[in-house]
Length: 185
Image (cartoon, rainbow, N blue to C red):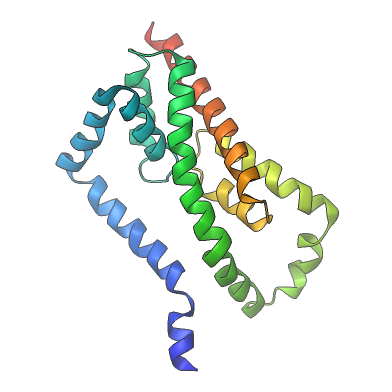
């Protein structure tokens, strides 16, 4: 029984280790310079920038790279291509949340007395609000992990998630790039 409990929260532990590694890497000047150099690769750079745009620790660098790309390409091109890159990162997060992390969160929820919140989580208002809030977070400049988690917990089908993620990320990136063009002109 102890062996099972020891590895029961492995994904939460891996997320914490990943956050720590990202903090250490973000302090490395060579690592940051390499990320900024991705913006010089045209459409491939836009795709890779979209992948970076969605996560907590790379979102500021991704935003800066999008603004740099906006000097060379149209907001529509960047929105669509970087949006496709963002979908790839979001899909990895979605798969992780939907398949593994949500089970661990449910276990923690039950362990810490989840019966008090059960009524709220099973209400009809909460059920439709979860995906809407998740989609709005994905469209915002905020990192996507929380929005993707809300969509994953809401039991959204993978093809619905990909469509929602692409539309919301592309819209959000388009708005950021368009807004930055107003200030750099």
